[in-house]
Length: 257
Image (tube, rainbow, N blue to C red; front, side):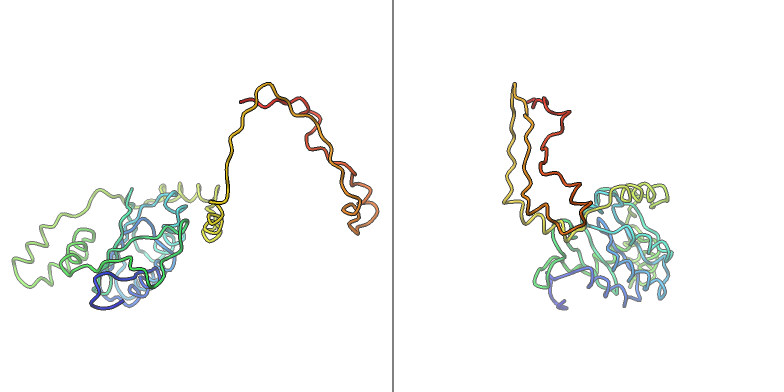
């Protein structure tokens, strides 16, 4: 990222690199959290207090099914002693680390891969915006900002900034509920889902309705050359030369509109 660029490129890898080298308060707010970012935060927690790492995400299974985040990333943070707050409906995102701040567009991996280097998906925050964001979201960072203020007026301004209180800590009940849902019906692999959507424009769906119609049984003959599978005689004897498209019990099944 260029040091003087207002519009810039930001990916999970770049965010993790920014976090790893940070010796100042870290604040992350987004719909979800990717594993690589969580690992960087866990590493940073060994250099600074976990209390100085603030994480706000929308911990919802729909968010994870869209690819905004990974539930394993939250587990990594909990093991590192980093608290996570549940911000229901959160869709905007920003990262503050190592004295830098960026507002960025989070990527739903179900729809597209993370942006390439030529995509400018982030805005650089000013120092005033960084200080205000930290003060609003992190009590620990607010105390530091007040202590480092240059004068009484600035100290008073930071002290009077309201703290966000609408969001709740991510407790065990919320975590287990989402974790259970994802285990029962795991999200599709995002790279596969993106490939499947490439063919969607070539598919057509036709709605048919039949009144007073019935399906007749039909038999298809299996060509002899297909029956010769090169297996033992026992297996070949079990293969029938005809195949019934419809079972006997469904011979008179009608199609209703």
